[in-house]
Image (cartoon, rainbow, N blue to C red; front, side):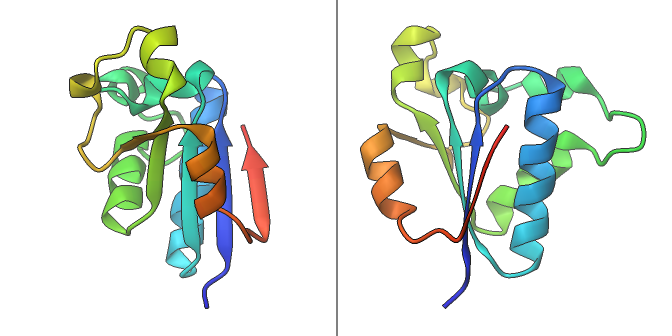
Length: 120
């Protein structure tokens, strides 16, 4: 059974999303099972066009490519359902239809047994 990693994004700055993307893609490359959760504070990163506004930070990988790789490699990526009302998000504005919308309890139940947890 693969090791399970949980990564939580709880901020709307580049310093919050880049570690999420780098840890997530790295873990997937190592065959870990990756679960990413966007809290309302980090919800903007799950929306169309937001990563593109960052460009490619100097010395770092392209965030759009990393996000796409994470989805393509099978990570479970979840936007907290509370963000819909809290941030006025329309599910049609999600950057990819593979991003799930869930409340915290189902996410936590699916992430049970994770051996690594990171919050950015």
